[in-house]
Image 1 (cartoon, rainbow, N blue to C red):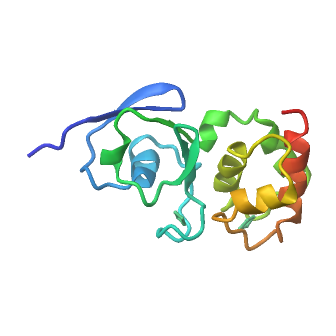
Image 2 (tube, protein in one colour; image 1 turned 120 degrees about the vertical axis):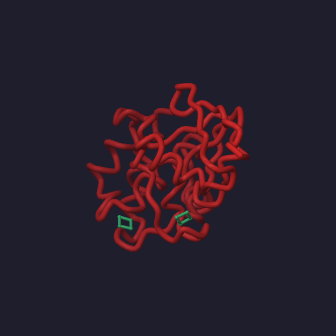
Amino acid sequence: MTPAAIRLTVNGRRVTSSAPPLTRLLDVLRGEWNLTGTKEGCGEGECGACTVLVDGAPVNSCLVPIAQMAGVRVTTIEGLKGKHPLQGAFVELGGAQCGICTPGMIMAAVALKSRPSTADMQAGLAGNLCRCTGYAGIYRAIRRATRSR
Ligand code: FES
Ligand code: FES
């Protein structure tokens, strides 16, 4: 039997997926729609590399089946179009090294409140692991990018 088509909005565009219902959102984004900015690290909800926004909230796309995405709005790193203040700040202030964690880290940071404290950043990014930067550059970048929010 052909799976029912799932309709949702990704980066402002209405899209349809006919993937089997338990296909991970991560795989549909990368494999069906070629949105390869979203990365896979652990594949089991531990690292945050696959973070996207679903209706504005950060979600691990490796844990979510496409069947649960009907009617939602998904934003991936491509949806920021390289123009979000966080993206420039991460580049300039050492927020990214190998880059595997970076798209997920930025998407989680987009969901932080304006002018987050260090505690806010630690709490908001608790599900996003970085093994390169030591986090200081990430926090510097977020501080600068959210100054004017
Ligand atoms: S790849 Fe999804 S949390 Fe690690
Ligand atoms: S920059 Fe390499 S894991 Fe974060």
